[in-house]
Length: 127
Image (cartoon, rainbow, N blue to C red):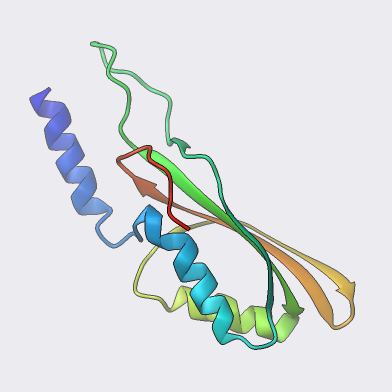
């Protein structure tokens, strides 16, 4: 148990610059509102899930969870590019899972982005 506590502490140190799961959705939406050409279609939390499925010899499960957010919006390519650059410049870090862009009617496109962060708790994200 002591070794597990030490590993949890080390994980906290290594993930210190990752955005908190409860802040991620709000941050993505806030940056989106700065781009006047983009329109939010949907924003939703994805179910938290263990990063790896593993147990130690005593049946303890890993304490690392993947917390994801899917954001969908419409706008032009250049506005989307500006949004992505603004998100990349934020002081917090997270992981990009996927980006899907589909042109609806030139020059408008619908964009779906899935990002995730890591946390030591399975709890729900705040929107």
